[in-house]
Image (cartoon, rainbow, N blue to C red; front, side, top):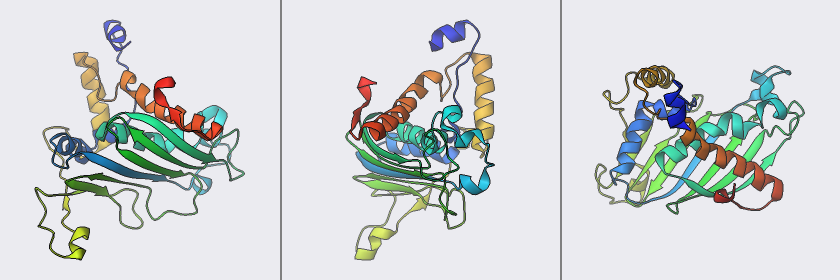
Length: 248
């Protein structure tokens, strides 16, 4: 599909902007290098107060127009980041709820899911689109045998910087309290992405792909894996059963 589109002079790219964050790009390199050891688990949140921020006729509140609610509109970006950093998801178990009256036609405003990855890592997702105020909007944590990552924003911030601790870079564990420290900030490689802004990088990358014909970092073909997770969450929530993504 990608090759045919390129021959026809078209580039298929999906706006998964989190892949274009320099720190997240660097995290992928750290994980791929083996510094954290085998990845065992991850946690991710995506939380917004759409009830206060959106107008009553917003398409994001309508499941028919948006295709769903918080999962497909907000959590989709964390799902894609999880795939980008950790690998493919093979099984999902999920619960979704349409609770606030402003949400219509099956647009869920609360969702929780367990992800099982191909490499046997497990993951936990939580999203809300109607929480009354948020301490932050997005966070994630990743745990490996020899290191861990966290991007937990300060209270009142939308998102926060990423930090990593590992046997390679952190002080030796001597006291019980040492397990809560030893994190250092992740500085994105200035040569890998042109700016510190993920949206700017995304646009520049798209323009470069149009000129060169190369496949985008967030290609339409790759994003099918992210959409499989989204659809698996909805199917699991509908049936109350785990969903094997290879069957979708």
